[in-house]
Length: 308
Image (cartoon, rainbow, N blue to C red; front, side, top):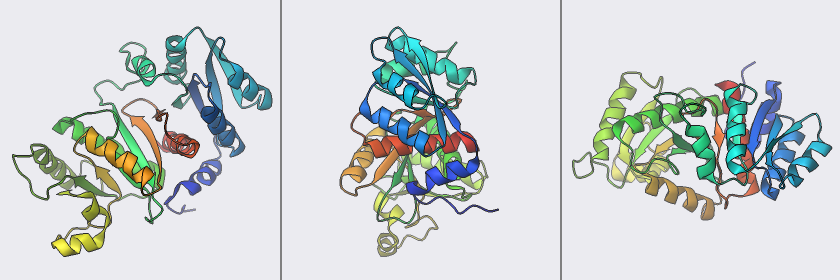
């Protein structure tokens, strides 16, 4: 039976339940109320089980969840945050968990374990990047974008990796095969004054050659043109991407991060995020993210883990 495409976050838990397979999630330092809420909600939605790597002396949340949901929660003891990071990453590396999630641990501590050349989970030769998915009330679809958190100023090779990862994630999460990808910038012209627009030329060549599978890719263009057909019509820009973008690739971390914070504050969007380039999705949310954002980050990572 053909599944309806996923166009909003509310559809994710049901789709995960219908998959009939629970995803095991390793959580490093689950010691805060938001992480507890996300874990409990995921268990009630019946799509995940959890291995909680808890630091000695900070086990209250883990013990409470294990007592309430003994068939869904197990605990691994850790001496400190770095030990918790190593043990959570090891659960993924050894195949015991399919998703890694950050609790109260500092992101740097977790990433040291993720990126360790001997024991980490970064795919050899790959690029670590951040993928975000926004459920914007005014849009009829989910909006994917990269990179808002990891790569400051991408090279052409890093842009290429970002495009491949986010297009693959779009297909895994939504179930749709042909995304429309906008290469965003403040200008609509390729110019040596903005060297990254030259990278965009290379990406479009790769798209035309079929490197990313079936895809419509265009740019440079601004975000409004990418998402608003009227703006494109006024400017006289004819492209299958204009007004219909599913994916936005940002020129640098400053633009991506600013968009992330702006769309959540002013457009009331819920944004999910995860790291890509690793052997399994890594959920690394901001301290300021809502519990909803953290829950849907985990749900998005779980559906990515199930669908490859």
